[in-house]
Image (cartoon, rainbow, N blue to C red):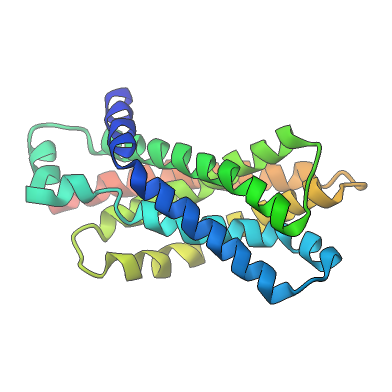
Length: 220
């Protein structure tokens, strides 16, 4: 799995223009969302967490959809499996690489949110933790569905349709936790939402790997 992760990180570095495009798309989405709210600074700050995660979610489809692009060219993925490569190691290598990329994207979009929505916070460590856990919740099922749709021409359309309904609990928990970090948490509720994120991540990361292995076995 370490070798697969190293390979994926190298591929993402070589295609870093795609990460730049995802950041520009996310920043543009945040800008458009701010226009929808208008000049009400209190409303902008109140809804900043939701808009941050919407921007990250929309941007994630650009990176997740092409996760298996290199392997699907010239049927390279089938060649890897026939050569004895572990399908689970390939999946987790890609999921971890996507997780790192989504986390970096979320961190990069945070200053844009702060500038546009006046939603600064001094609790940067907690905000980073929420972004890490939320990115993990998007990455695991997103990589699985990217594998399932990699052979289809309409993968850019099908991936959001399959992914978005599944990650609604993660998205809601991430938005709520981020909002509490930004607006304040007098009741100490952020820990409960973080626990919910950890629980869903444990479910997604365990089940998605098993489902991919079972799918690869049934196709043999």
